[in-house]
Length: 189
Image (cartoon, rainbow, N blue to C red; front, side, top):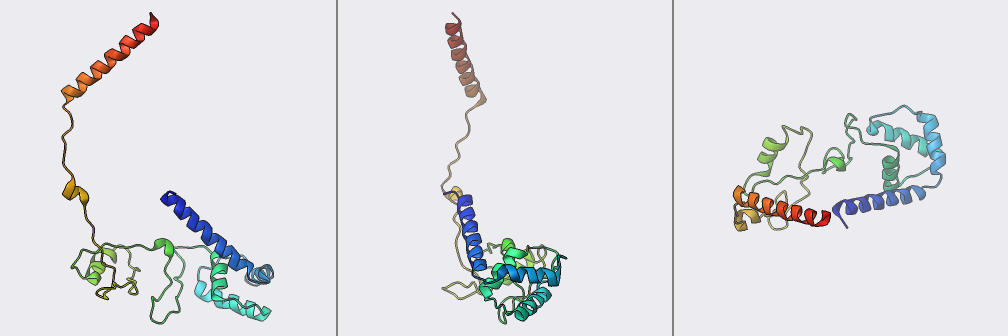
């Protein structure tokens, strides 16, 4: 399977899991209709204030949502918007805001360089609201970031072979053209 095929398979699995979580919510259609009547169809770009309103409406209806169901509802009925207010994570020790997994990225910090200095110099000028996920730590030294090594095989094992000269290439082309012309003459005779 190609890498894009793997990605597509993961997306399909995620959508199926999301659909299953939505199926598990009893009265979802009735809840959606009540929410539409209460909130209208005007877009709201602040999930931090919208979800408490949704919870209030659902509580009044006697509907209870697990965190998995809440995530499924949010993923099904919302979309990522770069201009929206960042969604607060609610985690005390974690990041202040929920990360947008579509924007997640990694950096290769040169060995021996301070991660925070590199981040401040190379990342923050381009993405001012980026942060370091400090939960990712190396098992050997317990410092932030996973240590890995990159070996450039071309640098160590590649042997340059100069291309053939133009005279040789031209001679091969003339010989090939001569063979083709000879075959054409034989066919027309």
